[in-house]
Every structure is written in C-alpha cells, then in structure tokens.
Amino acid sequence: MTKSALKKALKKHFITVNGVIATSATYIRGGETIELSIPVEISPKKKLILPLAVLFEDEHLAAIHKPAGILVSGNSFKTIAKALPQNLKQSTLANVTTPQPVHRLDYATTGILLVGKTSSSICTLNKMFEDKKVKKTYYAITIGEMEDLGKITLKIDGKESQSDYSVCESVPSKRFLKLNLVKLKPHTGRRHQLRKHLSHIGNPILGDKDYGIDALILKGKGLYLHAHSLKFTHPFTNKEVYLKDEIPLRFKKIFPRIK
Image (tube, rainbow, N blue to C red; front, top):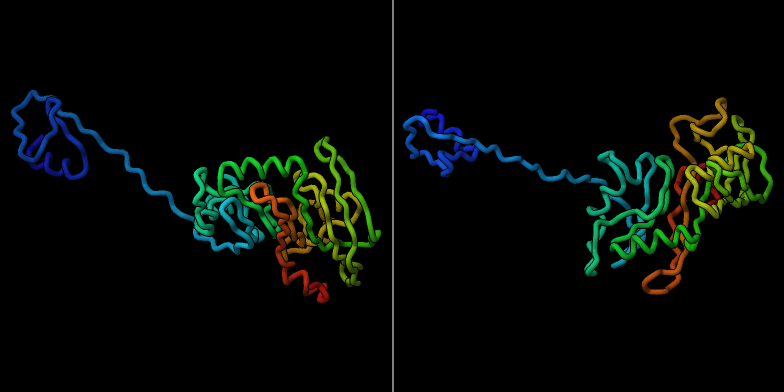
C-alpha cells in the first residue's frame, strides 16, 4: 500500500500495521501485516411524523384517537405504536418505557385507543382487558332491517364471544333500503368480533369489504365502525375514568341528530 493510498483509507477506516494503529506518517518497508477495520455505520432510527389527537394523558397512561387506514402495531414503518413517542409526554416515573398500545383496533376502525406509558401500567392494563374490567362502547352504521335490541353469541375461532347491540336510529336508503346507527358493547375481544357478529345476523357494517354483502359494499368511504368510549377504574389512582372519542363527521352526515 502506498502512502497516498494509506492517507485515503485512514479518512474512513481504522488501519493497523503490525498491530499498531497507523497514521499518514507510518512508513511501509514491506513484509508488514496490515489490517483494515471497516466500522459498522449505524444510522439513527427514522422517526415517524404522524400527529395524533391525544384525548387523555397522565404519568401512567394515555388515550389517543386512532385514525382509519393505519395499523396499531406491526412490522410496517407507519403504525400508531411508532408514532406514540412523538405525540406523548415522557413519564417521569422510575419504570418509564416506550409507550405501547394495550389493546387492538382494526386497520379500518377509528376511535379511542388506550396506551401504557410505564412497564407496570402496560402490564396492569393488559390484565384489566383480559379480566374484562374495561368497558368498551362502539358505534357502527349497519345495513338492513334489525331488531331494536339484541345479543350475538356466535363463537369466533372456536372461542366464546358476545356482543350486545341497540339500534339508536334508522333511516331509509335507496341503495341499502335501510341504514341503522347501532350502539355496540362487546363483552369479549375476539379479532374482528363486531364485524363478524353483525355480518352473521345479516346486518353487515357499512363499508365492510371483508364481511359485507358483495352487491352492497360501499367503496371509497371506509368502514363505519368507531370505538367511542372506554370506562374503567384507574389502576394507580383508583378514580373512575370515562373517556370518549367524538363520533366522526361522516356518521353525522347520515344521522344528523347525533350529538
């Protein structure tokens, strides 16, 4: 290696001659052992810039509005989980950790999502969901004639499941005959539970491409399913917490009397 080549290599890499770190003044006579070490360049993690509406926040937990068309978590770069650190205040508690969602909402579903900000709150909130200590309320717009009240107990993936519903209001529709604003209370948290249950009784959710009726699938408007509220006892303050996320404007365009 010539002195000129050595100078160029030293700008980017780490070189030793006979085990001694070389400089541009190192003289090469021949017969030396020259080793080149190429450092691994670790590029900083790219931060996801995705503004989220924060509905509630304290040192232990937070609740945000999840928009439609985004995954809660997963391997994709654009997820709610990856956007949380840029939208929430870091907890000052000793067991602070990266904020993490403690339950799921479907890709197409909008609404309230609960987040843990410390390791203890994430663990505790997950257990509360498992033990059904968090009461969830959803609103959906469904298609077709419905009973005013109902309980659906169709098993999902072989597991017991229950969803209770009540029809708040119905309007006639030229294309769908009738559309219903439905309040839903799931007692279990199976994957796609509400969508599967409503499809099972013949009243699929408006805009549901997976469980809807082919001839009645509404394209380009999204899924009319919204996670409206969460009610639970705060695991660290013992106060009753009732969090709500306002029903989207697109629901109100069909049912103007929604408050």
